[in-house]
Length: 146
Image 1 (cartoon, rainbow, N blue to C red):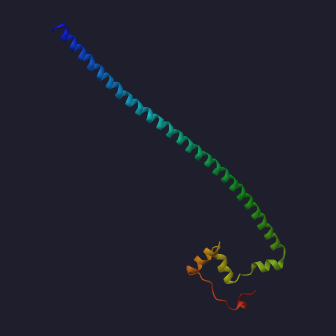
Image 2: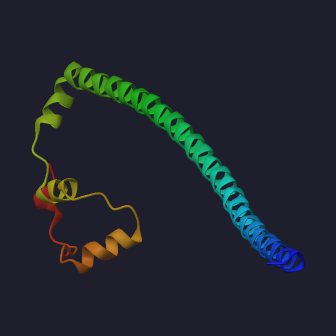
Image 3: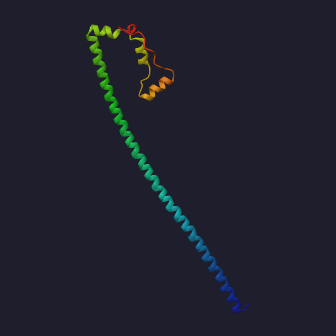
């Protein structure tokens, strides 16, 4: 091979290597951009996740405080109720007439009303009437008097 032919082939080989290198660099740059986008998105996702975790932790702390307040309030109500019940029992035990009155049997209608669940509004009343637990017609009240 002659020198000019060899130069031509060397130049052609250098051109092919340079073109292949440029394409390889472009492909690497594309992969780098994709990886950077993925890293940016992952960082945003981590930030959003951390914000959600922070809100959940704050909410859990608030719920714990509310639960503790409810427990304190319930304890105070229980204490007050026990005091009222004790006072009522003492008052009933002090007076023979009150003791006799408290020992008498309640009328059947009062027992029935006391054993039924409490009505918490018009909807509860309407539901009770619809379900068959209707009000009874008025009758002679003298049978229920003490």
